[in-house]
Amino acid sequence: MSKSNLNHLAERLPTAWQSSVIGKAAGANIKVLRMDSAAYPEEVHEVDEALLVIDGVMNLDLAGELVSVGAGELFLVPAGQPHAVVPGSHGTLIIIDQ
Image 1 (cartoon, helix red, strand yellow):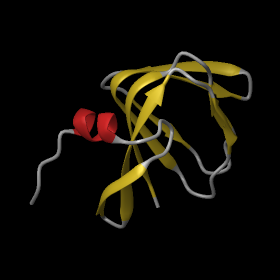
Image 2 (cartoon, helix red, strand yellow):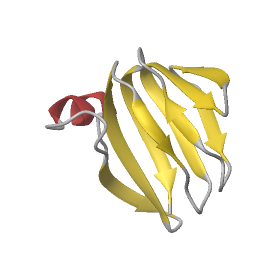
Image 3 (cartoon, helix red, strand yellow):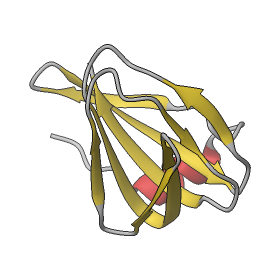
Image 4 (cartoon, helix red, strand yellow):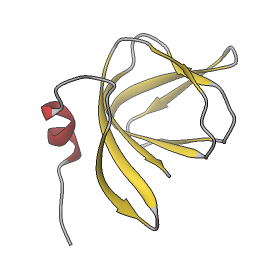
């Protein structure tokens, strides 16, 4: 077993919006990344993706619908759903995917 401070891990990442795999659980990757208020372009994945905001806020654009995800909240993006991050998103994000 190991313990990690997710905010400290995110702060130490050299580049915002580049995730780092910190472990695996039940076959899924657990990634941490630092959001820096910049936008992140639209993307689509072949698998479901869980987005867990640890600190700050993430603002998602889902086909023109804006969804704000705050600290302590989880958003599940279904496979095939285009999504982008709009400017103003900041803090620590955990991504769980395969």
